[in-house]
Length: 523
Ligand code: G4P
Image (tube, rainbow, N blue to C red; front, top):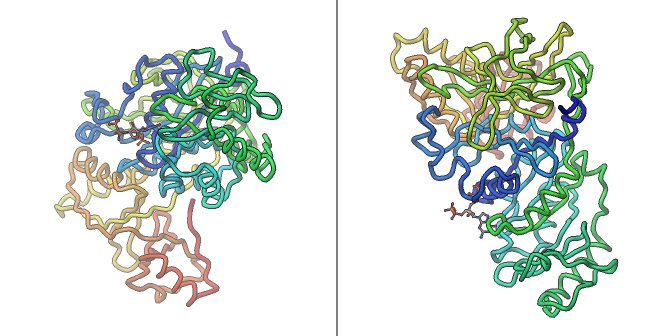
């Protein structure tokens, strides 16, 4: 039996972020394959509808997508890996952002033909604020892509992070020959004739020690050497401390589809990816994972996993101590005592009842309505309250009302509960008091509408307002006359005033007109 400390040290909990189609699913499959979880790539969840497990939300089945993030756990190289899924496409939502609050590091997958795309940038910004390590994987090297130097340059300038290429492509697309591995000082051959030729060792000057081969005779080899020399002279130094606080991203190239460069990437990633760290509480105390007291926080609630039972699952990230099935804990917000008997863990696409779990692991607690997002639970007597999860700035807005005026009561109840759960954000128009809901992804509205109908028996009508830029204004500086049709004044659910600007132009116009007024974006 592993000690708490040993078990914690082997945990690696991370998420993969990317723009849709960059290859997140393909890379996840390859990682699971390396972990021995699936035998063939192409069998993972989510894709093109094969996820439709009978007890998942109807909406999910209809669209063949995974509405809310799930967790995959497997072992590799003596490490216990937890991958938290961050949905993209239309299923992008605040859940995606919140999931990033529960990981210790992040892999950013970028399509090497497309470079940094909008969703990657958005997710990067959320991650970057947490100062956690970010590892970059430029994917699809088997296709003709952009020049590697160009990609790295774009990464640094667009995202404002320093990069250190751990390996460097020798050609790409049709003429892809291999990867020059700067970290292991060898060449990984793209299509080796045999396993023994897969890695060719290099000497200190980066010269191939093995017998001449296709790569060295190729002029690509000279180009690669020149570029490597340039990186050596003009590029960033590798600095582990800078990696650990998210200031420097190690960069890898490869092809998820061809399984090329993935194993080396995972091995190297596992060397640097951090084990779970301490977590701050509202009293300023930091709880180390090795602390014997069991604690954790809820970062996601998935409702209606089984419509027959109307159950929900609260996803809990264990922050400290050992979880044992049947243990008694306290829900900090309500002080309610709860026995954790019905708890699940996620292995590939099956769910298993879990007996023990450790810091860094994610457990799903069957819930009948006790939990809210951001809740802390703890065992024992010492009260622990972790810092709140941040509120994210919604970008899409809808006016909402009950179709049937007689349903006002259940309408209010439903809205209140769904807002508390974090399904959507709630605002009211300053003058009229109309309800306006906000989200970071369009699917949140659909989930909201579906759940209002199915759980609260209330049909709602949604009237789109389109994308807006939400900015919180210092209440002392507010004059309601500042509002106009291009900057709507609303209240958030804590009664704070917020302007919804039509676009950046409207926001700039406002800041020029009222240069002293403080506007604030949430995360
Ligand atoms: P996502 O989860 O980030 O949205 O991307 P996903 O892995 O689904 O990959 C998107 C498409 O890109 C898929 O093709 C996939 O096969 C392809 N792809 C992923 N990695 C690589 C790679 O290294 N090289 C090449 N050439 N293609 C790659 P698709 O045709 O859209 O989907 P499918 O029909 O194959 O599932």
